Length: 325
Image (cartoon, rainbow, N blue to C red; front, side, top):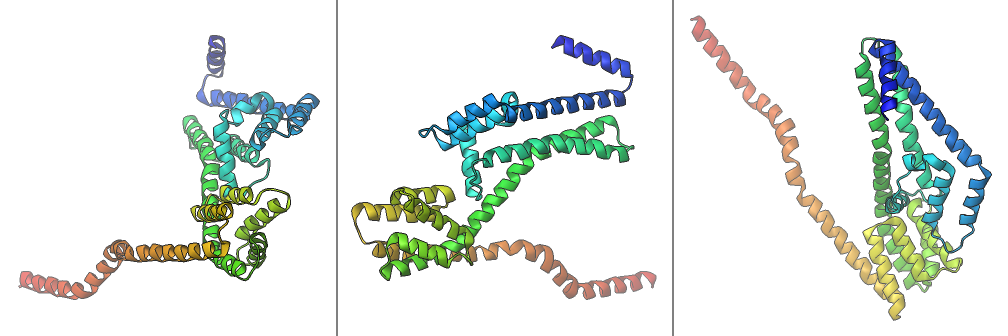
């Protein structure tokens, strides 16, 4: 480490100014980035790594998240610890978050961290390229802008993912009441639970495609041999919505104890409708409080200008006439 610092110091002294040192550091950064890309390419094309990946994929008892982790780290090789977190809990949490946003491909986690890594490396390089047209900025200002761009690239993917999760959750939340009412009607008309779910998925394909896809996945798992209770639990885990989780718990208990599905769905539908009404009343009660700030900042100033403005102008004119007199 001391030898490296001595080499850097010698290099800075040989250039004689900060601009040359900055160019040298940028060159070293580009070299390190090129080496990292070469490691990734070598890891992806290495037959030994590819065979190790195939062996892990062929293990039927291994978990899906573990296989994805092995795939990513096998491909990236020695640079994987710089791109991917080592904690499996963090990887599983990120995979679940991507699932909540609607991204459930096997390489979704890999793609997310790849995008983050590309942004962290490319945005500072973009700042360096743009600095050619910004000669008035000093070297240290450009360094600060590069570090800020790297931090922005590190934070931006997580922020966008949070917004995508919120948007997907909002779409599911808006579609759930219609789906619940249709499910009650289908079950009360004599359809079985699987047939009713498929019918609801078909009806919601145009108006609410997100929830329709989730319900279609439930039926696909049931047809593939997955137990109905497990398929419904998977639905709750994929969506992460409290309302859907409550419905799944109700259906699982109904199937376990052998009670009527139609009666249970009717009771849950009424309770959910009451819950939505209470939520709407709560939001309506907050309108008065939320209107205070727009009224004080926007409406009241204009009202005072219109109501008191002429009187103030007359008073000013009267006092002005008295002073002149």
